[in-house]
Image (cartoon, rainbow, N blue to C red; front, side):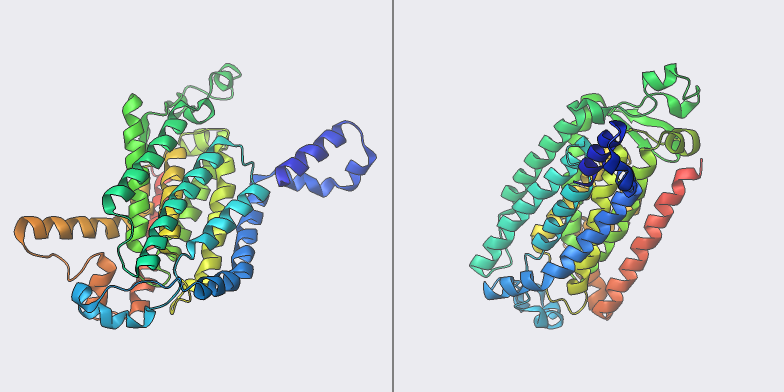
Length: 399
């Protein structure tokens, strides 16, 4: 909406309309920084405004979070017993706030914005079906793991193919036109980067170009990130707080990658002239995260459920692919990676050695069983997430 208003005003101004001079402030709507800030603020306010209504609606429909029994989780059932009945599916609040803010503040037909928003919505719908089944059956198990993974792979592969074959997305680095016009010299980073290239900030040239094999790699990133956020969502506000730091970091990356001189002359990172618009979408996610955290902080009044966690993970994984900083997600999203790895190691160790590495996985439950209070685990993981995000961004200018 804001970009459309700017386009209409700009056309009127060029045509010499008198009213256009009286509305010169509309010139602000062309700037990504202004619209990104508006998206963040708007999604935050939408979350605060509609949060109480959504919570009341969920409670009225008895959409309570099923808690695993003492036979399943032993001592953890005592620690989390007070959470029984807390409404879940709160992710609809995040999804709604992000998508509405994106439609108002961003250019929704921008290919980067569109693929991230659609992937987020599709993963959110899958999560909603999973949550609904849990609530209906009053069990902690929803859709079978095989069915859920199958749908996640389907969503991820569709998004990956769109990214691979869409011309506006697949071009990174200096374009032939920019090179011909002398906008770029012949430094290493100015060579156009293919969509199949794997990049990392410490190396100013791609590590490897996978060609069409990048499609399954992209799918793996999206599915992995979606499940990692889902595993992190086990304590009040834990996944939400980590989402804010990761989304904010990738908003910065998207903005930098969309500016020619900042990306290629200074940082030497993959550049695409359309990618900057993705910062608006990601800032909407940041704002929605803060708004949801208002109700999700300990003690939580609502849980995001798989509706929120799968959607957020899908959006962040897709954003990492769009910025060509997939490997950097391992650092910036280090808490999510740590949570997922703890589960993989725990399951692998038990199957191979019949021994557990942690008292319980994901790893945040391990620290709970060590005697850390829930608030201590959450805040310390938030601190770790902030530090990892800062470290990841600092790598942009090391080499």
